[in-house]
Length: 324
Image 1: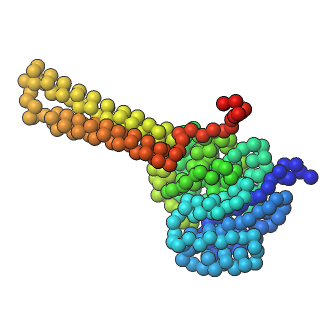
Image 2: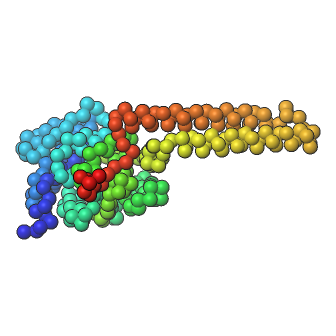
Image 3: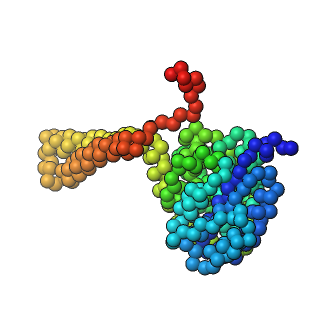
């Protein structure tokens, strides 16, 4: 028997759907067929993200035919990240695999993700190397976003946007996702000391329905990336951000003051005919505001950690704890 497979206890497959009634049954059959070849327990979690078509009815019909399929029906359309979070919260598997509900992710690649995870990785991300999407509206924005995310985060992946990913359960236990942040889980994992890998996966053209994403998604991703970066580097010391801005603004105000004095003494230029007094006041006021915001953010950070008894660190393991 394959010893790697025998150590794998259980899988949970999370698939969010939004108006994908034509893809559900076909995709469900493919997932089941792939999972039946894997030697472990498994469950499939379908999440209806407020679909306005017959997606829910199709999901429920499929679930009625297979007791290993669970359907979660959200009250309205919350977006892909929230739908995935709902699936993660209800998943019981030792390994959780997420994928899109449009049929473009190939369920046959689940085994490839698992094989890579068996090498000791905490997250394995799919890479749509031969992506079957439109170049202008999908590929180019995606390439730009991936380059920016890799550069800023220091976690270099070719395809952050690929939903086909495998996660160890413990990676997701304390993760809370908002916006478009499901794509940043590999970053969270790496920053927490976890191991992240990427494998090329088959990507298929959409057969039914329409894509729900456009060019505007790149801007949402960049804004989320800015927030994630702030959370990682400055969550416990927000004064570093606001304080740095405050010092820069106050210094600029001081330079403007010196310039105004110089012009008055040596050039006989009146304050009233230059914009310097306005600039001095603006920079000084904004600088003081940033400083006060930094102090307030520091107080809120302490309240956040102390009120919930949270720690600003996470322990991987303790050796000889009884001797401490």
